[in-house]
Image (spheres, helix red, strand yellow):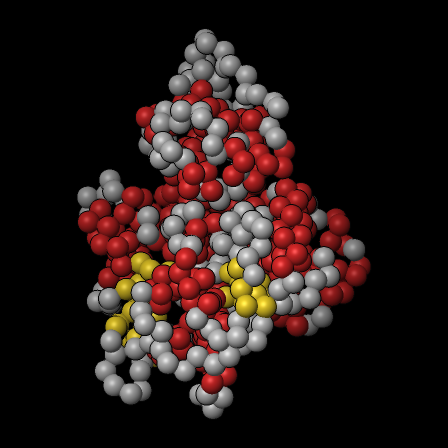
Length: 445
C-alpha cells in the first residue's frame, strides 16, 4: 500500500490558511486511526493512502503548515475526492472532512495559481447559469430543443463528439432528458381540500429538478397535500448553492444562501422541504456557512433548523390512509448526502415498507457512493464508472425491478447504469412510490 511520504521540513511559505481556508485545529482532529479507509470509495478502488481521507488530511495539514507547496500533485489527490462524507459517518474523532475539503478547495480556487482548469470551468458555468434562474431556463429550453429536434441523435451517430474535450464529451453523454412540461408553479401550489391545513411548508424546487424530474416535484406536492400540508413554492428562490460550495466557490454559495434565507423565512412556514439530498444537506448547513456574517448568522441558523428532507418530514407524521398495493421488488440506494451528511437512514425505508405489496431487498452496500458526486462523473468519468459498475453489480444481485433513491445525481447515475449494463427496471424517488401507492388506491384522484 502506497504511503504519503513525510513532507520536507523546510517551510515553503505557502499555505491554505486564512479567509475561507480550513482551520488547522480542525485538520489536527484526525488521529490517523484508519477507520475511514475502507469506507472511502477512492481508497477502496485504488488502495493508495493519498486517495484516502487520512491521506488527504495529511496533505492538507502539510500545506496548511507551509511545509509543502500546493502542487499539481496535491491538487490531483484532493480533486479525486467525491466529497461523499462517508468518512465523517465513521470517524471517532468527529473530523468534519466535508467542510475541511470545501474550505481547502475554496482557498486554492480563490488564490487561483494552482487551481485546476476543471475547477475554474465549473465555477464559471455554475455562476453563469445555475446562479441565475432565467439563464438556466433558457439553457434548458435550448437543450430540450436540441434533444427533440433529432440533432442530438444525429450528432452522436456522426462521432463528432469525439472531437470535444473529455469533460464536455462526458457532459453531453450524461445529459438528462429535458421535460416538455417543467415544474414552474409558484406561490401556493397545493392545499388540503377537506379542511384547514395542518402545516404550511415551503418547497425548494431547485435548479435542475424542475426540468428533468418534474414528475418527482409533482408527486412530492401531492403527497404533502395528502398529509395535510399547504405547500408554497417561493417565487424568488434561487439555487441552494450546493454545487458551488462543493466546487470551492464559497463566496457565491453565501450569496445564494442569503437570498434563499430572506425569501423562505418571509413565508412564515412550519418547515422548508427539500426532495434532493444534496440540496437539503447544504441548506441545513447555512448556519455554519454564514456563522461569521453579523447580519445573517442568526437568520441562517433559524433557516437551517426548519429544513427537512421530504422523507424525514413524512416519517415523523402518521401516514395517511389509502395506501394501495404495489406488487414490486425494490432496492434502496442511500444518497451520500442524505445518509452521511444528514444522518437519515431509517426514514426512507420506513415509508417504503409501509406500502402494501412492496418487497424491499437490500443490496450488499447501499451506503456506498454510486459515483455521481455532483459534477464528479463529468470531470472524473473513469473513477465514476468504476464505482457505478460496482453499484450495478449490487443492484443486479437483488433482482429488483425498481431502484429507489432520494437524490437527483444518484438517479441520473443509476439510470445511466441501467442503460449501460442493459439491466431491466427503472429508478424512482421514494415519494414517487408513495404517490403511486395512494393513486392506485384511488385511480380517479
